[in-house]
Image (cartoon, rainbow, N blue to C red):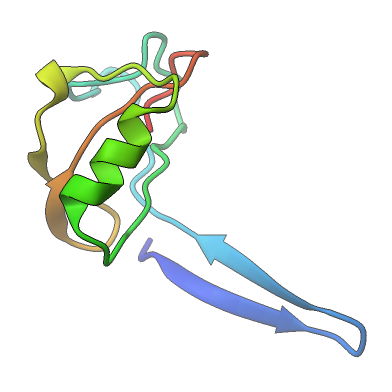
Length: 95
């Protein structure tokens, strides 16, 4: 499945729907992964155009866990290969 953005409109409202790909396969997880990976789950990723260091500085002020020693890593996401910083939420979901 390819990531895409769909705009749904009606007379009263315009809604934006986001569709993403790369679902996780059971038994074929990759590192880092959620504390309790679930079949069919996915990661939550954001594409940004801002300077990555500024984005990371702001995200580091939030109460998120930072695996991989806090390093920016190259990964292939839903759209392409890009620099990633991995965080985990309080519920240990990978972000």
